Image (cartoon, rainbow, N blue to C red; front, side):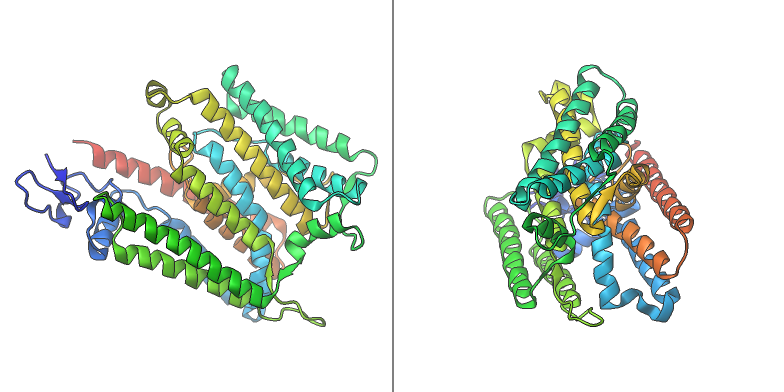
Length: 445
């Protein structure tokens, strides 16, 4: 029987270090690399052992994103796909997909599904839009909160029905899909639409500006520096504190690498956004929707990975009966997952409202929910529950957005977008299925 030494690496019973090449034989390849690595080299060898054991992590979606980028760069007219103007448009277009994927990820994490996401999102956007349209003096943030709270209440209703009456989430949310579609039509009434394109009414201008207003270049660089220092400092102090207490912590090189990756990725986004994209008037700066979406990814990452509630969600998704016996309030966790999913969908609907300048009864909520599930699964969230992160929604949403954007540049109709997205989704589910099958075979004695 092998153990773990005080430095966080594996050791044999006689005290001799366990060779990293023996990880598979020792069945520790399923252990997070941070636990079995003392340096960066050992970390990557342990990580590769996990990949070979069936846990590919985010590699598939990274490969998919690179492949989509290369293909559309080659085939798009004048290779415009990688132009600064188009990349910023891609960020804007992907925002709704990303937030919807994060929303759907909460219920997928429990092995459930929410089919009402699309029309719940529409209700969130409509509530916020009607609020600033009917009350000119209403602050935009009050309208935003109203939209999120309204949709969170929908999640509470559906989650309560599912958990207390023990009804299948598929049936309850399918009923919600139809019901909330009807409610959306009733809310819009005879006008059939709500718009927020007024430049005079401050609330409308602010909501519209989520996508179409920009952070000045200097402020964006200063903001990036503050974010990198804050996140990097937090990561460094947390890992250093764990090392000081003799607890498991990632290698120093890995911590520095993560901080450098955040700085480089953020710098690339800011640099691209600060290129003038206007044809007649200058259009410069990072769209406000970018930091909004990234803030959501950060907040939900902390919620899922740094709180007791997050650990309970993973436990319930992995084995609800074991979680119940361990003292987890399973009905509460399941209900809150639907509350979070619907509330986050409401925010996605508000972003969609900003992106379109308004919403009407022609919105295709069915297509939105399919994109939400597709983006979450393509990003790496498992349909079987127990595995998923907020960053998976970010990556999956970028893939969906890149497909949408690239096919639009080529002038291809919507049916091609749907077919290609379907094929990418099928590939992602196949990878997930094969990974679980491989992991299961590795676990057999």
